[in-house]
Length: 419
Image 1 (cartoon, rainbow, N blue to C red):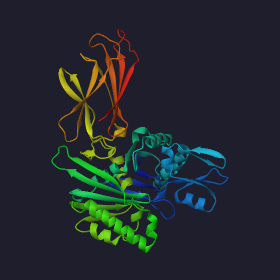
Image 2: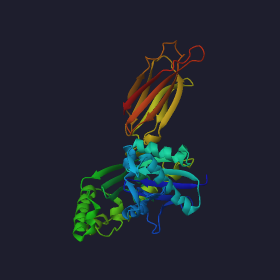
Image 3: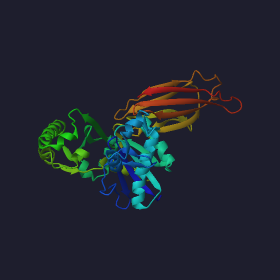
Image 4: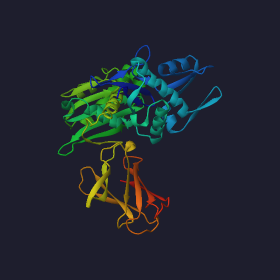
């Protein structure tokens, strides 16, 4: 399929865009504005007395010089379904976010002169179902079909970025430090040995030692921040075999200031610095979604991923078999299964839930006593399984009846499980 393959990291402070190059099999950051900055402030500004809207640094400058009204922290505003009143007109968060997203998508389109988007993956710092739903809705409004849109969180994006590097880089554990204005985030990647299929895991921690980037404006502030980072690195990495360290976030735009921290992390480790780690990870996911066979034959365990296999025991061709409706390591937001079958000697639906690394499943049942009583093998049901979180499973069972003899009652039974 021709068209752009994009990874877009949208946070409350900055947005970053990466474009996947299929020939080079790599993702490159896309700059914006005259200075080609890859960090685009997530804000909009409506120009005074005009219908025009600006984004990013242009929005900030216009607001600074009194040429318009600025609205920032758009992700949080969408999550809270907020509004903003500008020149007497109330705008919803979704309306402003649509304006922002439209102009963000225009950047790679204008640079490449290609309008069609073959695949796009958005990444958010944390999974927020409301924001994710809005992203899908707005993408469709802007001409990107639902099947081409993928959404993941930063932990997932970091995982796929690391897996896309040479295997020697992640031969042992990998550490990622993300230093942004609202805090310091740490991600630790590791391969769980001795498992087939191979299990990879990323643990994310927002460190309490986080600090405002304003302290980096003075030499004394830099020294203090350096000591904080060094203390964190010693605590998190000191007794572990770490083969590579990645430094990202606005705080590491100039990666040379934390001298003590760099001395520690660079000792017997490969260290990489730069922006766009999460958007590039998303771009790799966008590209992989277009392939007939995934390049990532792993069970990925992290925030945003289902940690158990969910299966139904069904009889098929005279034999009892397990029908998997949710695979361990799948993105919960994109996992949905529907299956239709005839009940045989039972008035319930049983699910076998097996956590990664365990051979002992747990049974979860949905009782169907609200459905009409019928003779055996004359009730067809449709079972739909979906997720509202990595451990939150929703099951809906619909009574489909059995042809003209036993019409559907139209009843549906819903049950939510924490697995």
